[in-house]
Length: 233
Image (cartoon, rainbow, N blue to C red; front, top):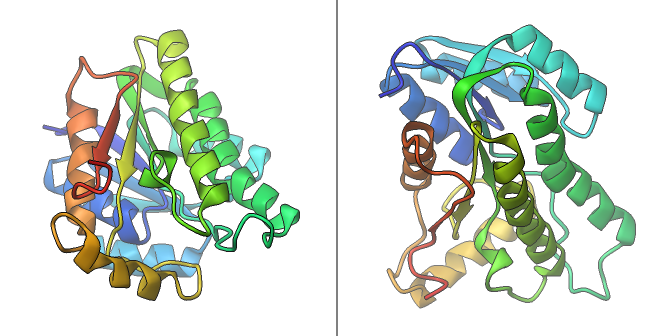
């Protein structure tokens, strides 16, 4: 499906991004994974093997994003699977500076990536953002996350109209059994599993399937694909 194409995965050193990179390789693509940590990138590349290269980038730095695309050159599909440290306190307890920093990484990071990808993405290419089910159903401690996820989905819908024929879509994952940069978040999420309709957390490869679908379906744009095990039913 992706033979002779080039896929750039931001956040590709771990979690959902790593699974997207792996499935893209399996589908025949050349893959570039990018994130802030070179150590994690090299470890991921060793696991992935195949046609994968690594690039370091901090998406909160606009110049760094611009330089990333110059180094990567022409490509076909961009997956933004940014997973910053997200504020997890209640609304009145969160430090405003932490909320701003999280927005700068997850929302504004994806905004910058889409804006500067356009000079390099090939005709009929696509951009896939990542939001999360807190955009639709929130939980205590998720006020900031809910706001930024909803903003990401709204941005993708708006720019899908402006950037056509480049396609812009969003994957909205539910609770996934994967490492988190937030202390205690993994344990919190795992305790939710018995209360979910499917009685388990999602696997990263199950979420990655949605990105591969959006890469390949030439008539999908402005879409939000929710992969949440029924959380928002």
